[in-house]
Image (tube, helix red, strand yellow):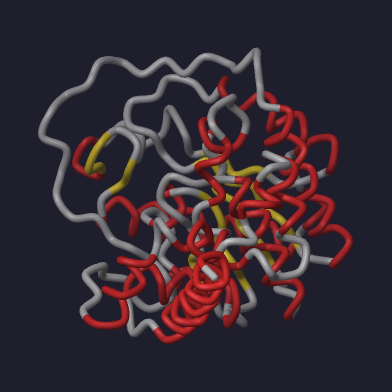
Length: 297
């Protein structure tokens, strides 16, 4: 009887959490559900916090004459974003994906389990279970429990249904205000000599998924304060060259990356910086779409 009671409670908890996930009135719960299950924009921006804080959809939309949604996620990269792209492309086919690559989340070795947190609630979506099993086969069994599936997200889902605290502007963009009030040492990002084969696998799968669906893909490196080189992106550059993917590199040695007034911290542009950066790359993206033969020339 005890195990039956636990099973019933687990099932009921799953129903409640599934409802909360779909019915949120704001916050991250609403933005994640929209991006994965409801978005229909022609241009989707993917990446980490450096995506969601750096690219302003309204500016890109005005320049490209296309609808744009920013689906960046703080502290996440290719593991989560490949899963999200799978969910998006199972519903419709965007015209363009802009992927803001971040070395630590897209190619470096670290704990990949943490990137599954936002995918847990979408585990039953097509193709998502295989990502979990790639990272840890035991996840296949753990995900049978709704208590496990939702244990780290229940409080936030509940809050986002009652009193959301996260501010998300139209189009998914999250502005950061304020200016960096310290002067960091020179940033020297060295090239990565040891990379995560699983992240590399999913980066390639993202490229191949876009190719198979006829989706234009652009890889972008947004500004990092005072960075002297973008050597850390050599592996991604070689992948892009192999697959003929255009790269927009504003990571280092440019008028934005050297302007402290445009940054909240070394990794993130403030709202003024995001405006300037987005206005700068919008015509570049427009030119890439109009002249695909000029890729990486």
